[in-house]
Image 1 (cartoon, rainbow, N blue to C red):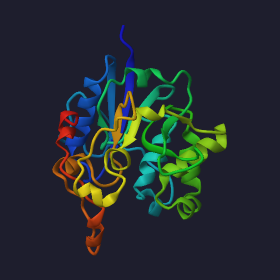
Image 2: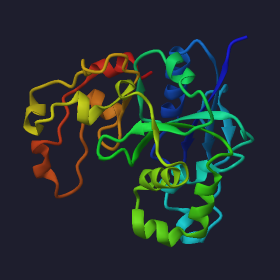
Image 3: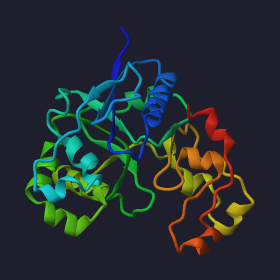
Length: 261
């Protein structure tokens, strides 16, 4: 009998249309030999693939003004000890804007215990922050993170503001002493590793899959551009940021379409 893997994602509001959820589900199914139970925690299931298991958004039982700080809907609320009836089950979380480019069987086999695993954040030093575009844990082991946020929302928001992955990481380290990271070569950042590090050269050099990461599995699109924007070569700027076009630019990157569908 094939192993069944629990993959979860979360979608609320209108930032991500159903296509993102369906595409993530499609990419994962194509890139593993395992059976996949794919869960989407959402308040609106319209347009989602019929085989996706729909679960309600987890609730943060805290002061009303802190229930809508959207970033904690993921890194705090998903730590619920029951989480859609998945208690004691290992789950693998993916952001909706990742691009999967190779087989995930090795990735799904990697955790050998009930420990928490996450990407080592490319912006941090000292192995103290995980990049929360993809992480995995056993449901029932992180409930204290949700509970602490519910009881101390002002303290946490004052300290971390919207850096919810830093909050998540700090609580894991506080309890377990350190973070467990996926192998570095399995993940990369589109902005940091696929695009030229010299901003003005991005006008002339096409983004490429990095050659120094053998076995690369997932490209992370954190912030701007997202996959559809990168395909078109669009980098959205806020009003008054036109001068940033000197370095905030992305040439059309059609090779993403080979994977993101």
